[in-house]
Length: 240
Image (cartoon, rainbow, N blue to C red; front, side, top):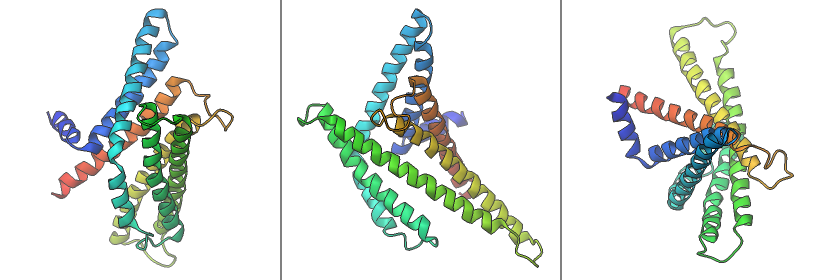
């Protein structure tokens, strides 16, 4: 009952719905891609699951038409990252925010071109939006690595000092933060692999992934996002 209540609560928010649609979409692509390579009956089921995956992806694209203002508000709030102590983390975040901000209008143009709302070739705009997404993910990976390095330095016991209770509590908190960043890192790596796959053939492994592998990587990334979201929700419940 509690699980159902949590699911309903999650679906009431835009981010919660997006995480669910993303997970279902990539899950259908994973299973559909595997079944499509099997016998004729299973292959037909696999093809239908791949169609469902495509439609769920289109659904997320349409929903993202309204994300520009939210992203702009976040970018303005973060600004140049004056509150960040580490300059590398600050500038990685600033450039990542810029890439994310540019991503949305480029994707909107590509969507409008596919929908025949504007009469231009959508391919170029899909490539640009995918490249911006990949850049954001790459910057996010660099940011996570730098944060993990900084946190591990804080975990070291200063020479000549004994381990007190406050240090043990701080160390436990830092370990939790490190685990969270490692999950973010793994999620970004999985998404980056897919982003490169969707770039024009000839660039690294672009166009070489079978559907099931794209689905697997996307499912891993999505489940990490769901896990982290559920963790943050439980922390809020404990605090209240």
